[in-house]
Length: 262
Image (tube, rainbow, N blue to C red; front, side):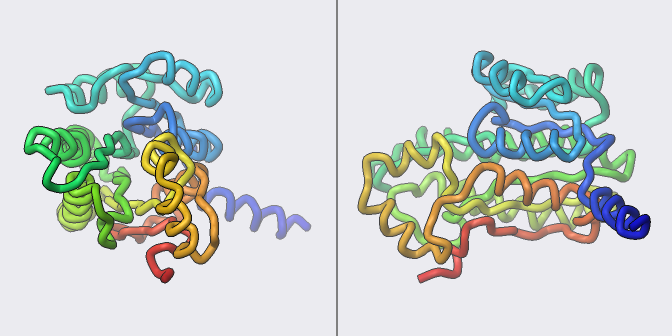
């Protein structure tokens, strides 16, 4: 029995985030909140970032004393540098960054203006780049850190009516690969999670008025259902924990098999 107990402790430690401080952009709802729940359960301190204070307050009330929030639009100039400094001062050195904040735009290609196109890229690509650049300096100095990007099925397959979102998430894949090559020698791992169709406000925005598309998605998903935000959280814990210590530069689909289904 003592040996079994020791093995259980060793297994738990492999997936522990005790002593880590994680910043999650867009962490007040949806997938970001699912990641925050999983991180707190794994022992991390969590700082969630978003624009709506009431949403962040409600999330922190659920997450408990290991969580705090900061109100900011991630696309604002200098938001990353200022917020990360505030987190380091009040919570602790940032060792995990989850680039989750995003916007969705469902429009035909010819009706999508350049301004709308750039707005989507600004949030998913430019802001994520800026937050990673701001966080990486201290991670590299300590030779310890993990950066997670939330990619998308649109980076793996053709999906109509979301050209700006598709372009942005495909660019995120390039960021992950390039940053992993550059930062991994400095002790900072960079990975992406590719969510399938996960229960979230963004999913309902896309599918609630399109039952035919919803049925097509479920038919091509071998597991035959939508995922839960906690499924993304569990994958993020793995990638950021000691269990994932030799994993960098990957795209990890969490999609019920949708990317290989037909």
